[in-house]
Length: 448
Image (cartoon, rainbow, N blue to C red; front, side, top):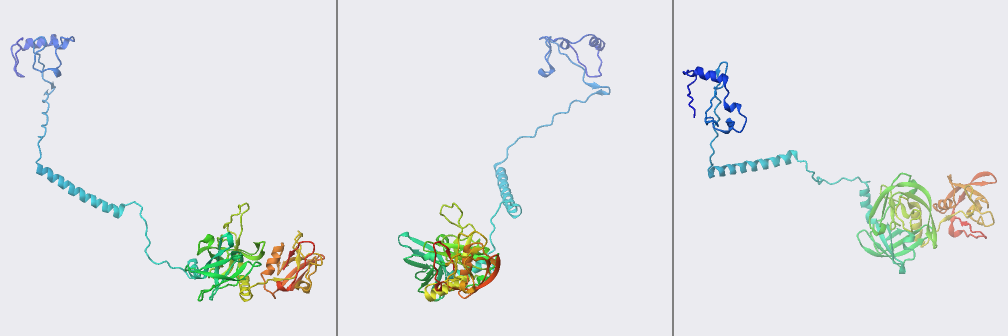
């Protein structure tokens, strides 16, 4: 190793001049060589190790124009790594659990109290609902004890069901004739579930009404309203047993009045000057009451309209028809008194082949019944009737139902066209039992 003496900074030696000369003219081998013999980089060997040529090279300390730069700062010592005692760890864990539990319960309470967004069910306060005396609920509750269900056993055909209502406290019940027609036995089921055998007191196919009687006293009869006071738009309530579902209540309005409806079968046709309602009426409602908003009877539910091509099935389509209460009450009284019911007539026969304005009296000797009300009033064969009591007539059924809606002894005003002129003729209605009709070769509609 070549001797190379060192001296502290600022201490000259006798070789300073020679060394300075050498440093300006010669480059250390470690800086000039790039081959494998180059001295190892400072980062890869100790700064005090000799080079490949066994010579230790030194360089002048870093300095600027003001002197030597300060040495780099010493690295910060790392904090000592030690171990915690078990008691300390246990205390920390327990404290963390206590703090966490408290924070959890507190946070949950605060969330439920102020910030919960979870939907919850709302419960009623428990206060009783106040219902007006004329509400549907109040009316239904008041009339339900008076409405009954009816089961009629019709031989091998099984049972038919319908509805009815009490009209007298001594056991009289009103229903439709078609509900009990041909029945071998009839059972009336009261609102409390009691089943009572019933007897048919009287029935009429002309009005589709029947009166039954059960062995019971103290029943609650329903109140009849004056159906002539009913107007379109009045509220209606239908009560009955549609499809055997006892005590069913439906609501609607009066949709129309004086709707000519024919119902029945080969055993008889009923001509009804019906009240039309959109309250739901279905099979089984027949014979049940149609009520006004006071719970009074304005009609007896009797028929419903069926859609074309319905395949024989029928249900509510919002077109139900009821016999007006005035007619039902008169007929029921007749059936209770005599077991039969008659209807008013004017004593003419109407030509169904006529297609012009109004309806035409058959133009032959059979058109006007001899000795009948029409003959007495001046009606002649071939006359055309265009109105009754000012209400236009366009179909035979319309005139028939208008007359049958009246009572025997009532006066009606017929507007008659004859020979190009019109006149009003007043006719006093008579009972159907007092007028005998004769028919000719044609098949006219037997009038009333």
